[in-house]
Image (cartoon, rainbow, N blue to C red; front, side, top):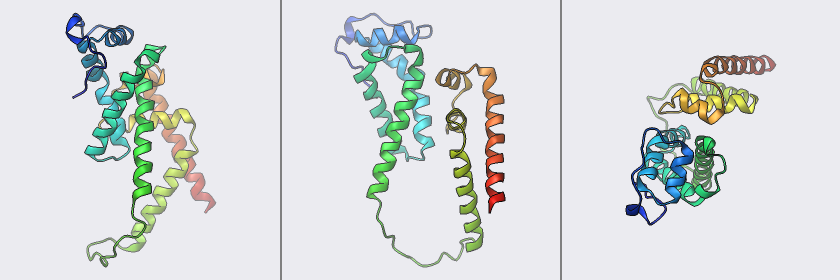
Length: 200
């Protein structure tokens, strides 16, 4: 359970949860209002969780990242000059913390794995190589996309899903433009893959 960063929690009146802007909530949090803090966590907790899970972190690691993100907010809530971009701030912070955990795990991963012999139920090597090649091509094609497309595709593919209203807040795009832009980015991704395949 997240805790509010200040100490005067019982001295502040409750916040009108459903209608307050981010600016009002942040001001109340700075004043030590626990209700405002709980509203921020409720409002953006799903976003933070979705991004952590998009990095394929297990539940325990994702929970640790989530806790760290909220801690970062308590440390920096007085420094956020544009509260309308709070969702974007949380998304960036979550991404950075998730990447930090992923890099730590890569550094501590054993360099040699125990060979337990072939799996009799495994697919043929040729099929697995084809899958690896396809994944590699998709990653290469994704890297070639614009920053805008990469950000949007990460958000729309997050698990659990992030609603379009939140994606709109993060990216600054109108909700109605998200679907068409997503389609254009996917078309560009397919074209990149096709061009890469034609070079082989």
